[in-house]
Length: 334
Image 1 (cartoon, rainbow, N blue to C red):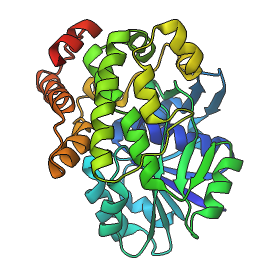
Image 2: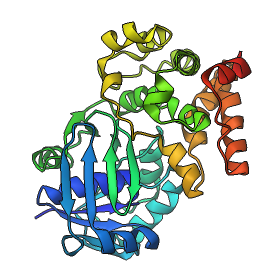
Image 3: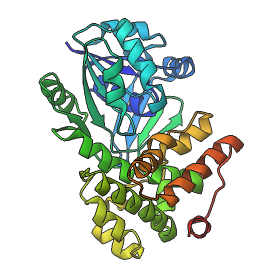
Image 4: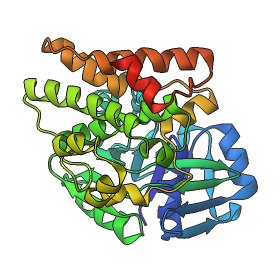
């Protein structure tokens, strides 16, 4: 049986690994001591916006805190934060067997390249997680938005993608992972806005002013991607350019055009909001920062994303969200 290691078992890692384990796969979770203690006491409870539920008791979960456990893995799903990718690659190089397959399930567009540069001959594939997972405490992890995992198809990953899907973890293949990652990044520009609002995701997105700011962020991203000759692949049913245009529509029209908004439940929050609550470092430089960096390379101004980066970093310095209303945030960026 294929053994999966979840390297960086946080919210996404526990949900993805938990779904695989619930589907009968051999899974080793590798994460922080605090979460290991929580899971050893409570097990894992996985829920989603469609009211599905998987329960794993502590005796059916193997949770390690040392990367030495990577030595037993056939497939390594990397779920660490982007700023830890180089360190993760070094641990994989030290502990993993050469034939292990590494799949990045991280935010941003450059993590697979960072992993490739640091591993010891292992095959590395990019991946994309389109949905939000929030840690509700006591081993409970909730998927609050729809979507399927997308994994770069390589000779080494083709059978793994099928196996993951058969285990109940909805997974699709792509031969254009960079386009997929850039498409996801454009949509993920709301990650920071959810933090700045301090509101549940659905409540934030029902405010047209927050959506207008989101649209401004995406339009800057589209401009720099066009200059760089990068074509983003849609993350979900809507093309990013069309998506940016419809965000300013009234709620009742938007919900008809983009019904996925209706599937977001009341528990959903962004990962950056969760990072603030947990006292972690934000991934803002790998999300909005990727747009700003590409804009600088091609001399395309990105004032909205640049200012949002500064606001997010200030919030983390103060360890508190500014809790802007949509209008306040739009006024600050206009």
